[in-house]
Image (cartoon, one colour):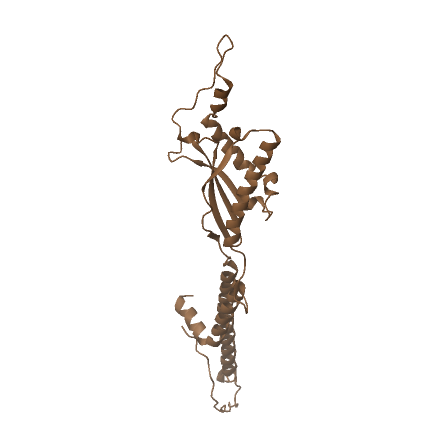
Length: 270
């Protein structure tokens, strides 16, 4: 059946076609919006990102050469105590990269998430280390991504996640008597970005409702076309059966002429 045939059937039963089309549009609107408020159905997902640098006091990233540790000579004589206090020791830079990977996993742990007022699910938080531009090494930088159902909630959750991770580390450092000069610091190098939409309400329901109504409309119009053609064929057979075959008459019998009457025969549209 070609397209012209479909169009002819739809046009012949244009009232049914119009009703089916309007019904499909109405169901699509109801599946997409809440009537009468016209509020979109489904939930939106918004996201915000921030970056944290894993480092220590003294800005080791700005030093060309790290101070050498104090070495005591064979006689046991070393530098004076006051000179030892002035010299700050720095960790191996590679250690911060390993700690960044560890803290990225710690950010989605129950210990940290329990400190967040929003009580987010682990799926709402993404924490990962940042690769260098060349991709050869991993930087001591944690990229923290938070997701929520509104722009303000996503950005606020990011701030609370940073505070929770810092609070957990500071609590553990204080309970183990780690001095401030020896503590690892989380420095925010990129504040939470303006929220951006990750995904909006699904339009699948509206598309399905419209397609089902259109398919149903085409099926109903073709069914009505088939019924109309069957009625026309039955009426034509009834008219033909009223004529008397002259070869069936016996000798001396005459067929009375039938009274003419109008017969309407439906013509199929091609």
